[in-house]
Figure 1: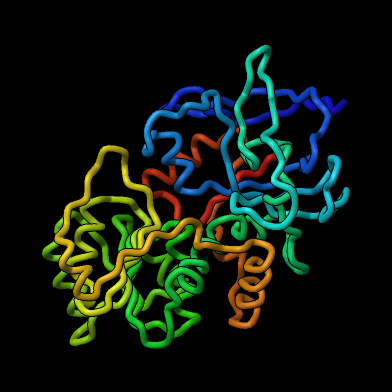
Figure 2: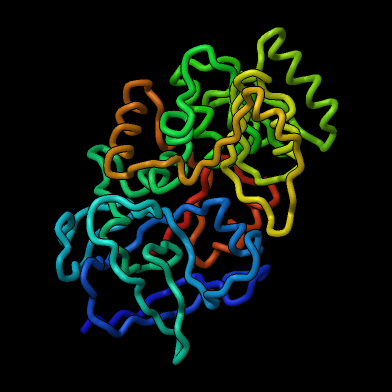
Length: 353
């Protein structure tokens, strides 16, 4: 019997703060489950969307969230092949090697807390084996968090989904954790120009440190933005427009301005439920493409190590992707700061004092 009692940040009601509560697990580890003591968690923009209901009503309330983090293995369930006690691990939402275990069950008082195969907004987590990868040598718990989602998604978009290459022109709309990793990966591949666009100036300045050759502050005027983009491009067509925001107006704008013969509109954000996109399909018949990306199509057990090696080769310091660390008790402050553009890069939630 596995008896745990630990703090977690749980969503009880959408568009509300997470509640910091003590939750329990009373059952044995099932086949393929791994108990991890969480040290750090990141906060992905998609988690903000879950809290605010971007995709609609959350059917799993109360709901434990978080899908990128790091920790140490404390116990393994039956059948676990790739991990042992004391392994240092990255927690990620994309499937990797190992068993796809059932979801764990937690309780607050007598109420069930719903959870997925990986969660990171808690001091401990019961995780499916195939949502774990060992931390590469040379990385500590803090630095490795970004490989749980932001880096693997960003680099996966560039290298797996669309294969941006030397001299391709690229534009990234939305410079959060995934956005800056897209620009970083495009820069490594020698894309030029790399145009970063965001409504928050702090994020734009940060993106310039991570591969963007140009950056534009968007205030809502698409005509003005279009003119500025084409001033940068000069006579060069736009090969890749990558949207991380899910904003339908941005998506429609992107389709209009890409290379008419072979431009690529890449969708990496989630649009709000019931929002519609309108465009003339003739554009697609004449050569434009719309490509959807689900986590960069990454394979964590392969890509985490490849991206880390790429960082080393190009003298990119992983720690420079993070700007602020909050305690678990301050997670709602971190979420608010992200929403209001007070943060750039990725923030971290430290689970234990």
